[in-house]
Amino acid sequence: MIKLDIINRVAEKTGVPKMRAEQAVDALFHSMKEALTRGERIELRGFGVFVVKPRKRGVGRNPRTGEEVAIPSGKTIRFKPGKDLQVSDDSAVSGEANNDAEDSGL
Image 1 (cartoon, rainbow, N blue to C red):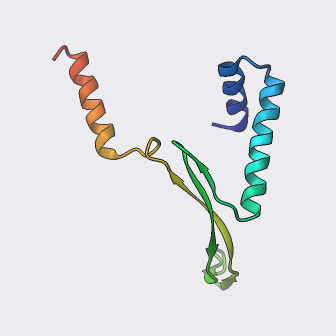
Image 2: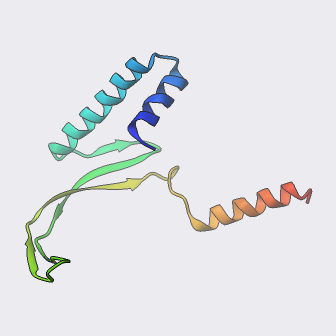
C-alpha cells in the first residue's frame, strides 16, 4: 500500500473529495514526523506505538571492498504493533482451518 492508496481509501470511506483526503493524510503524516523529530512517542490505540530509540555506535562493512566502516550513534524509529494488529502464526492457521471446515459443510 502506498500513500495514494491511503488517500483513496480515506476519500472512499468518508465521502470527502480526494483533494481534501490528501490534505488530511498529509497533515497527519506531517504532524507525526514533527512529533518523532522532537523525540515524542506516538500512541495510536488499537494500532500501535511509534517510539524514537537511541542507536549505538557500531562497525559495519563495505560490501564491495570488505573495508570496515564506523557507524555513528544516532536515533531510530521503532514501531510496536497494538494487540488488535498483532498476527500470530497459530491464529492464522486455525482461522484457515475453520474456514476450510465451513466450506466443506463440516
